[in-house]
Length: 231
Ligand code: C5J
Image (cartoon, rainbow, N blue to C red; front, side, top):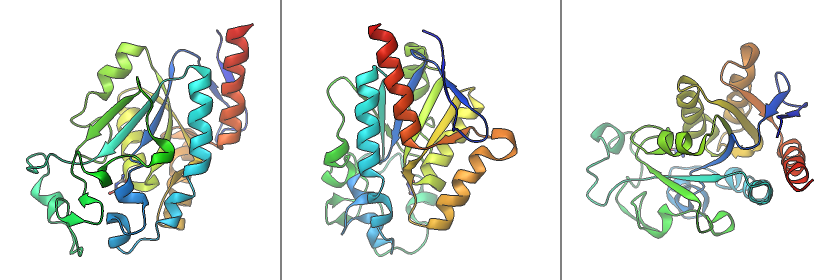
């Protein structure tokens, strides 16, 4: 199958190649999204992230129908915190730190309820879930080998937060040679100005880190994958 262009992508049309594309869903975890969770305890308005859930659920459904692999990530740490650098653990002066008991179990600890993905976006059997100790999805994870094994060279990037884990992952992906399209209404930030500038930074300077397009355009393109496969 030949590549299909998303003509409304910024800064230029993006050609999506069936068979070489994966959808990455970054850190859509209860600890970041739910009222009463870690994100809110840091003083953030979690409603800013919850806006992403509905369009992202639609995009995930479209990817599954099109046969595009969906890869989920979760930021978190081992129960003994041996993979959490002191500099991360001690940063700032939050009311609760990583590993402390929170409303949804120990904060950002693997196996706890709050560490897992929100119900609406739960992985289905067969989908890869990458547990990552850092902000980027490549650092200290198996993501690169998962993508190489599947012949993936292009990433549709979604999730939270735009300026932290999404940006770090896109930057890591660029340095590893992946083409990234960030789906504008499927990434979210607690801060409106970071959302806007974060997206602008991706596509600035001729697409220094990649492309940006809305989910409607990506879903239209994925629907074409489906049509051309069944033709
Ligand atoms: C943060 C993330 N913001 N997933 N994590 O600490 O962006």
